Image (cartoon, rainbow, N blue to C red; front, top):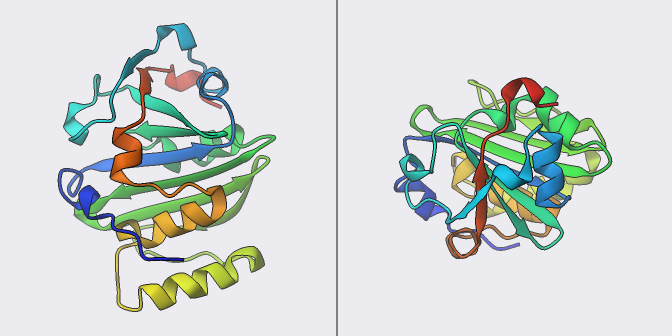
Length: 187
């Protein structure tokens, strides 16, 4: 495990809220599970600035290998009813941050069950599962000083759970499909 440079998110994204959700499923399946219609989504790039996403209520999905990456400019990645529903029959990892207030959230779900959750206003870890104990110890050794979770540690945990090393180049080089799903239709 190597430290990850997440400094590109501290620029334009430093005062914004965003959720990154990773689901082992096809993008069309993710959109359908959220109550959306794939044919209503349109292609576009990952935003250079969080204020540049096409519509305030829209989110973007992109295929990364066997996974779908979801960029949500809102709180979708912190809604336990949504993420557990999306994880039914698969794995889901969600990280969300409101950087201006130093609030980080992280979830790992398997088949509709939350296996690990971290974050609230007090930045309190819930009990670390046995499956993550060694990984968390390694992350702490790489980041021994107090560091906000979204400034590197969360991305290393994402990489461990998904195999995806999130970089600016990966996201900005991916084609996203942008659209809206009805909030009432979300699982």
